[in-house]
Image 1 (cartoon, rainbow, N blue to C red):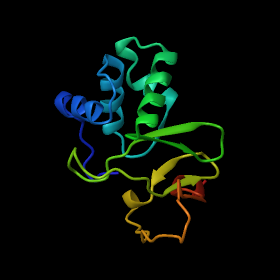
Image 2: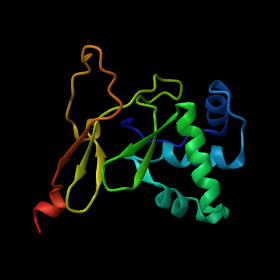
Image 3: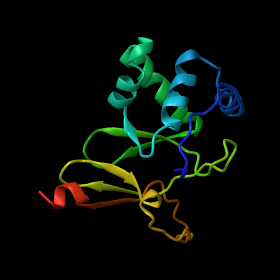
Length: 148
C-alpha cells in the first residue's frame, strides 16, 4: 500500500470505475474511498463499520466489494481464517498508479494483517518461472501478542 494513505477524490474514484468498465454507484464510490484510507486489508465487517453512517446494507457492501474485486481494482485476501479481507490495489502515492498484489503478514494469535512493505521489509519481485503468484502471506506473531 501507499506510504501516504489518503482518501480518493470523487473524481479519482469515478475515473477508476470508468477505467475498469464499472458503472459509478454511490456504494462503489464510498467503498473505494473507504479502502483508500486503510493501511492494511480490512474485512467486510470493517467496511460496514466505517460506512455505517451511510446506511448501507451488508449485502450491498458485499456485492460492491466483489464487483471491485472482479474488476481488478480491489484484492480479496484469504489468510486462512475464513474471513476475506479487502484492499485497494494502488501501491504508490498517485491515484493512477500501477495496481498489483503484494505480500502480507498475519499474526497467528490475534489475526492482525499488515502489508509487508508498510513494515519496512522488502520482497524482491521476481518471476517464478511459469507460475503466476496470486498472493503471498507470511504468518508470525505481532509485537503486541509476543509481549503478552
